[in-house]
Image 1 (cartoon, rainbow, N blue to C red):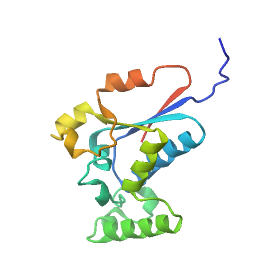
Image 2: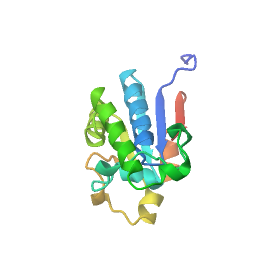
Image 3: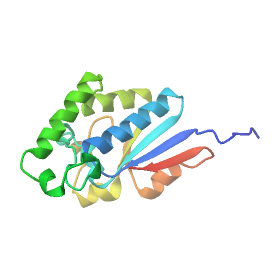
Image 4: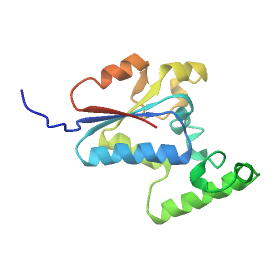
Length: 160
């Protein structure tokens, strides 16, 4: 048996929120794994499903309320227009760095071999169908199925 020396062989990323900052965190980590020759899979659950929902993925926002990294009082973050302004500013900064938008990033991830999975329970709970989701979706899995996908030495799971 070959010694693995703790090498990471697969990243299993669980994405539960579709705020712009969470989605990009998951996408960048999955993409980085592939660039390093590491397998990567993303399991979209609960509100994370919006990142792969055809009609919702282009309208993701920055979370301004209750986000301590915004360095603004919660009341200010909840004012009309603040979330849209913060989202617009973030998207402009990402464009400057040539970071692809969500749709294009999903294409890149899929083309690089990242497996994209939707959570069956969340799909049922939100009454979503396979047709609601991006074509690149590799399938709909139960939590148990996802854990079986991650079986083996060198697999790391990350919850975002």
